[in-house]
Length: 131
Image 1 (cartoon, rainbow, N blue to C red):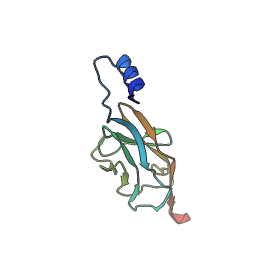
Image 2: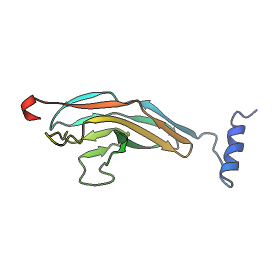
Image 3: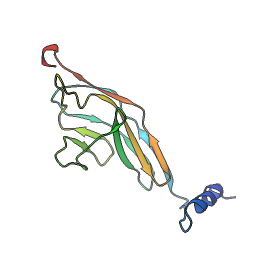
Image 4: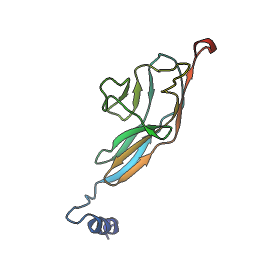
């Protein structure tokens, strides 16, 4: 008895002419990001590692909004690493603008679905007079 038979049947109904390969699997988050406290102007990395087949694409969201990375804008100071982690060249934080501080999640997707990481907060540590 093929344990994937119901999934294959459903898949063929939803996507006629396509075949679900038995070795394919939906994304899962293998490494969740952790909360960070970072100094203003310093680099930082929020880790995220996703598994699945085919390899899932990873996007990051901050406070519910998609994060722009170097893949969207080559001048962005946020880089999406091949592992899926989000690297900040330097944390930006000012009196009026705090674009990097917030709550982040990574979302991994492939054609079988998506997986969402735990929330991770990024906070900026600075002297009272410099913020």
